[in-house]
Length: 390
Image 1: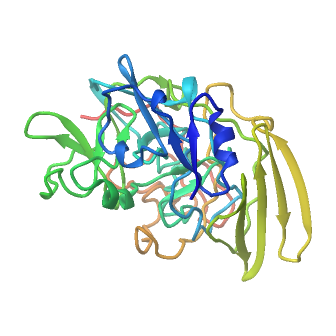
Image 2 (image 1 turned 90 degrees about the horizontal axis):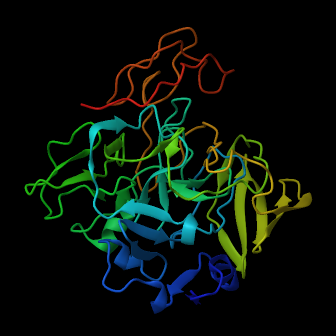
């Protein structure tokens, strides 16, 4: 895997200069603030730049992890993972000193756009619950590492990245919520069992400091924010912005996505099958454009080139929606077999005309249910304002 030194050179240009996918990014010493550190990120210092800027930690990354991406996804709209320029004024920011909120806020019916946390390998973590109430993990939309690409072709997780614990150890966080509090794995930092978690998947240590824990079921990471965050619409304010490069692709039924492959400098291929027949998307990323070559199951090809950020999307400052489709569960991966929840639970829609059942760990949803997962859409409940916890 090639290393690329980043000094004054453009971040995205450095990524694309590498023939490896994903690229290993080695930051120049001058880009780091001396004497600053944030536990867990040190294990990925060649890929993620962390520095302190007054009251904030600034976290720069391309969001491309060093593990295979996209393998096992069955619910898909032809998105692919592309490097993102999350640097400078468009970097992730966490408070150096988190402040407990007077009223913690649940993410069950809020924060459906953009990230709620960032993993220590620089990959953002989005809410697992979509505006419709669907749990994207239970819907089969995630790869073997709990991630996928959204409408901006931006790779992100929706569940806890447990695989990072093997790298950072149990004593370090595997992620941080955007309120600044750390997210540890399935044990306490000293290796002891986790007990007494609150509704947000967190609790206070013996010294009074608060932290979250990852879990294999909802909410998977932080189920909201114990600490103070800025709310802008349906997302956390002050975080990176990305805009779709192209219009959303159409859902492909019976598709099974395979792992992304590198085909050269700034070039990748995403192979997949539809009902057992092979197809692929080849794409080449330049600093200001992306060229896609689509090969269907009959061998026919078409090529499309888009300017980065030129396809239109949400208003400036608002993250794009995920735009995935609910489908059958993928094969077993990092999380093991995907459970099938009862109708109306875990964000799945109940039978048409019936009330929504209780969500996993949360209050019953209000409003009429929709048709079954593969039927025509039904009425959805009116989205509520953020729910205070406690």
